Length: 554
Image 1 (tube, helix red, strand yellow):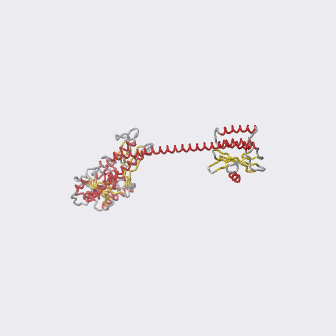
Image 2: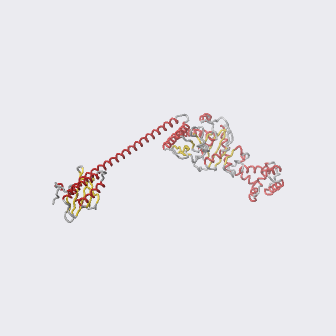
Image 3: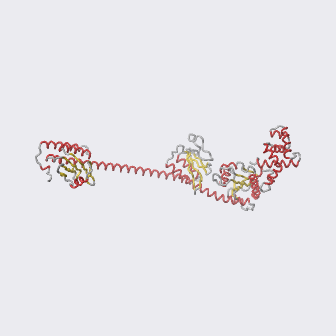
């Protein structure tokens, strides 16, 4: 049976007309704030009130067609609704009456209700259902339009935010690149000056507005620029003054290594207690480090050439060959070879604990002591030709600190003119050998201070001296060791005092009777008569040798 056209009825009773007025008011409510949920809720309630029909399933239009909005899943029902193709009509007619009511708006299906009732509604009620479909479809179309406008507005807003973010990013990038270019230009200009290394550090301090220090690879200060100028650190910034001139920077300083070809050439320190440097600051430090690395590497290459030339000249001088152009070669190396010179030999444990090359450490420490030197390596020993007149007494301690080890020995030869430096070389070897063979092998020995040992050490390995000491003092040494006595020292002081009892007792802080007792014990234990001139001489020499080999070598 075909569905009657609900609008074919021309005459409407008064109740239907009243309901139409209610539908008009309902449509007004739907358009107050059009939304899918609100429209469906109002239309469902109105359909039930007007006809008693229950809305079992609601469909809403989507891009792919109608989709279930509410109601239990029912594939057969979905296919039946789809088959109606937007035309309202009966789906079932029997014990249960089911009807699909489509909602049209702006020429498109906007949704549908599947209505269910135990009996088919009257023609007036059907008229009202179709009348309800008109504002419902229009309201759904309006809600869809509003939703699309809102989505479009959100998309435009997101697009605007994205564009604004891109603009901000681009502006920040331009500002960063501009800052980088300014930093590069400033540091390049500083590098082009006569003192590029110091100017780079000063320019970096101006850029960062912080104190900056440049240290060499040994931790010694090369350049220090305080924030605000090179006059010195601000007391507000650095209450303890600048960092230690030799060693690692304190915790308030941020360090950046200066490296070239895998080798550390130095360190840039930035005073930054709060670690508040920006990315621009870090770029400036990295760029300055790269430029200083170029400066230091260039100086290192020049120094290496000078070192090689100095090494060749030092080898020629100590080998005793005639150096015709020695003065000219030395002048080219800024080394004065016109006066007396000394040869210094240095040997240390290898490798050093901190990996520092002994030759580099020797060269660095002599330069720090302002001692001009020609340095070369001969097997495991470092050799330096230095001008006479310089105090080298602190060289051992300085080298021990530089290489983090005290296991080293230094021998210094006598002063000679350049043509006789082979003699100084031989004396330095003797001083080194005597020190190394002594009971205190680590330290520094000057050939000028060896006294008798300069002429007595002829055995090559010191064995003859040891035998001489053992022959004349061996029994006394063993007695002192066994009885914890002090006979050898007493004998030495007595002989040094020329046999004077009063001076000896005063030097030993003992009574004359105690001294007399000890001298008697010395005669008994050693079997030597101190009063005999020959025994007295040999005993005196033996005590001097033992003292020199054990205690007096510094």
